[in-house]
Image 1: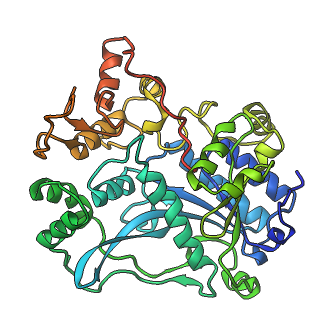
Image 2: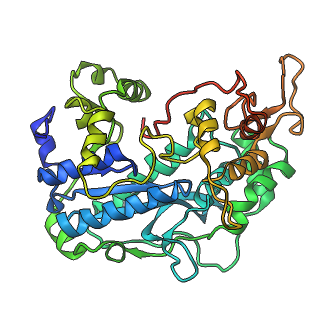
Image 3: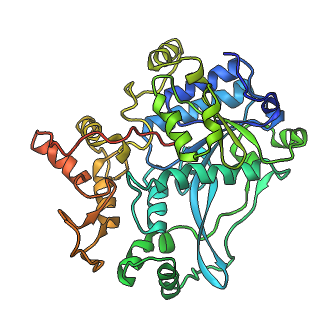
Length: 414
């Protein structure tokens, strides 16, 4: 695979591989590595954004890919997670978003910098926002993937070998519920104080209120001092590489539509100019790589992602963007819990989170006199006609409701 550039100057920009944890992005990564398309001295890096809602086998696959990437090819590979921290802005303490670096082992008391896998990161985002992401408002993609990647790259492109501490130095939280609710109302919100406070509790009371200083070197086997001394990069532009395939033509189209820049429609190659000086390339699309070629690639390797092909279990296991029918299929394949731990690999976790954070328009005392209301809830599926509880019920009744149709494909990076 000989890469193409819409502008020759792009070859000098840092190359960022956005690794999703699936087979397609895995093939893209190792094809680029084998063809020597990545150079650490240019600032090239691989990033995996952990949502804490991935399948156990995905985490094993990511860890193996990270090991191969760093030890065999010498390219740094970082796992990062969304998190919030508490600080003062205009005299009011509140939570703000950032990221943290994590290693390739699960979080535990013995490994406090490990990746989270019980949905903690996902719930922290939901609680911070005080509403669920949905098919119409994909805050999960924006906050847990897009935004924190740019935060990370800002630190990565600097000359520093560590990321700074964020948050105040007090032992106790300083946010005031009344002040936060006033702020909410000034921003146009109308959720009653009691409901607002209840939804915010997980993030504001249970999650860490600061991010500690972290050294890049503690999260990679690559010599960070050597990389930082040789990067000499000044600027904010970079090239990102994503694992869209040729049999997913709608993904590039949706990305161009989201960015809404007329200049992107003049290119006849798999390239999009995104915001913040990001040049997005999709080589698998350009070279007509489909799911068939991806499967053949991994069939020829000594190791592989231990999940069914087709992407059913990829990304967040029960992602609402997969649609009712696919979620029903996943639920039918779900293995019984062997422990008392409830994780996002179990549909009950999603049922609990949906019930906890969905909007109840009646409880919020909304004026519904001019609306035709079939139910008062706004959930992951937006209007409440579909819910995770209904999907689980459909399994028990051994029938598929017509409501459980297909939604948009689960394409987190679009």
